[in-house]
Image 1 (tube, one colour):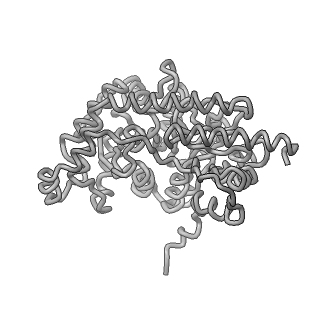
Image 2 (tube, one colour; image 1 turned 135 degrees about the vertical axis):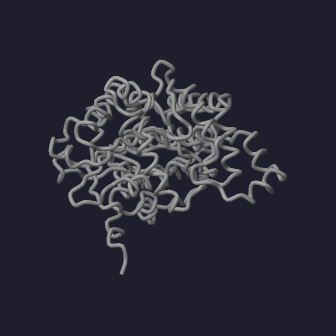
Length: 414
């Protein structure tokens, strides 16, 4: 016997990428540059590294069974950051739960909160972070892919969802700034989605792990909880009712290996999620909690990190703009690049000719022709380019992308 739902899972994009490239290896002298994986490469904060390396503290911390709920100091540090960043008041005792990064938490929340009843749906952007899909399928629900199309400025087309589909939805994942599109969801759209959640009885799960990487100080990403706070007060609902927000130190603080994040929001949903996680056995270790609290309390390194990305995007943009229909993302660290040929061939030939790896958009989207929303795969004709490496490597990679476009043009796009 086995879990039959495992057979519904699609291969992860990086598995598909390896298979796509198996016969397209580079045979020249160019060093390989990977722009396919969104793994931050900027240096982590020195003070976090030093805290993790403190032998006396570590000796004591390793002798502690950590509480699933996290320690008081970490939850307080998170609540203070949420108030500074988004002007929201979050009870550190009832409305915050530390988690081992957003990836496992975004998956586990579906297992904890979905009913598993036949016909239930989970809405998610398309293209998307594949954890949303796997979480829905393994919780017994069906994904409802909500297209983020270029003609809609890569925003979610919630208007295409029917009343019957809204009634069947138990959870909606959103991501702002979006992966891979880089678009920021407006507070107006968030408020409309919260109203739908109250009307149709579903939970909104907001993946906000890219919230601190933005490029226009007049268009700073908001949080679902900032909007939910106003809605709850106006409608007389419990605080943040039906809303959960997920944040991480991976992108904000260049700490992907720390596996540290949190979920905050509706105290009833947090209570249920904590109950699930108590049995799940995923409490964050004490030394990780201590280091995480330090990171949430410091903003200097976050500002410096954001400036590094702004500088890189300006530099690579100057190189790429003459050769591609280039669109500056509103947030995150990806270019969602329209390709002059189909994205799969683009990725293969770019690797073979320029020894640069990018992620085809086809692997990040799903064909929606059968679920009554916008037909086709919204990821097709795009590649996701992750500018996470050092600036010098990014500039070399950008020039290779430019050279590749020039060669394609000379070949007539063949």
